[in-house]
Amino acid sequence: MPVDGVILRKIVTQLRSFHTERLKQVYAPAKSRLYLIFSNGCIVVNAEPGVSAVYLLDWPREAVDVLAPFGSFLRKKLKGARLREIRQRGTDRVVELVFQKIETSQELAEYRLILE
Image 1: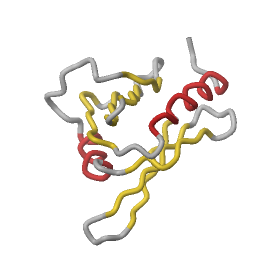
Image 2: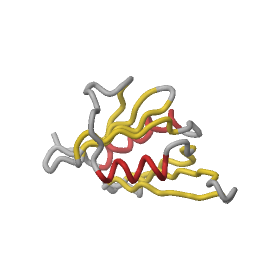
Image 3: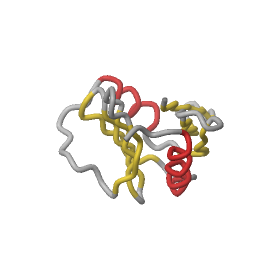
Image 4: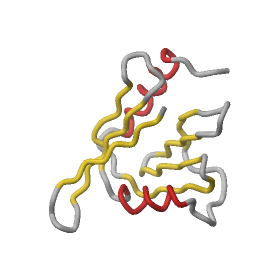
């Protein structure tokens, strides 16, 4: 069943339970799947064509031995960052996750992960 903007709004409401949480770890076992691990659960992003989705889990269900290049990049930038905002653009099927992190230079950096 395809996800429309109304269903996605309900999912975004559930994702807001992660608001202000720190990102503990990023796993990307495949180039089309991403696990964002927080202390109280996991946001799963599946970008597989035809079955793309974003949903919540208690913990990843698969072992993660290798890390896709994009996952490695996200881990480097986002690990330890605080999830500051989760928003949906109107009723579009676009979700924006806004992270903030204090870099080693003591500057506050903001990162946006846009899920479409």
